[in-house]
Image (cartoon, rainbow, N blue to C red; front, side, top):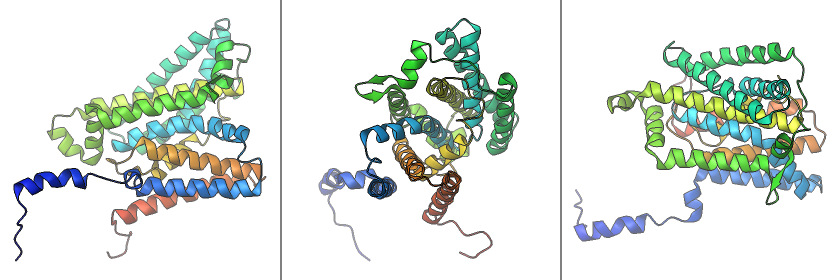
Length: 342
């Protein structure tokens, strides 16, 4: 039997040395893998097409990834606390239609249009949260129902067609096509939301409680955390950010879109969160990894489009990446394969 002869003084000196980590180690294996994959994708398509890495095309990639990025960030939050929201794409459609229809119905008031859209987003998010918490419905089932219901609502409100025209309004033009310090306004909005959510998760009691709920909800409840309140609040946050994404979709396309531009966003958001390191069981994840995954998906999608590859292959690629991300998670966690011995 060995005896630990380390003195207390030596023990006190050890932690600072142990805390010295290289920048690469601080990034983490998951993020390093995503950075490597992103470099490969950029290099591959850059070699195939000389315009792919041009500043104008990189800006196109960034703008196209903004809406997905916003949804992926809030999807990260809800997954961390053990939930899921499959209805985010349909929520974007509702907000897009509402913002444009209220804009035209109030005599071209962009402020009222955006305010009402955000209000509708809050109501939809709270409704999801209440159904999950007090209706005791599994989040996947509840938001799957929301996916269909909100999509139908957007189509009913708009009669299935694009509504309004907002590009004669300076506010919508600024949101959709304006720039600040050379970067599109849409990208700045994504950056601000990402920083705010990162600070919330990493440096506040609210963030620590969200991780605790996802890691072990029973222990979190015994620790005095009001889980129901947190879950409803998280789904309300999703509604707000989905509404912002819907407003940006309206500004970018010039009209309210009930389906076009929002359909399939839920798959992209969940794929980005899973690729970014979110454990689908909850309790693990972060904004940094999610944003890297969003960049990877955006670069891949744009590359396939630039090369004229059938857009249906983009759906195949997204599905394959989601499965790969989950498989990697299961392997890392040592999960037993279904029906097979350890």
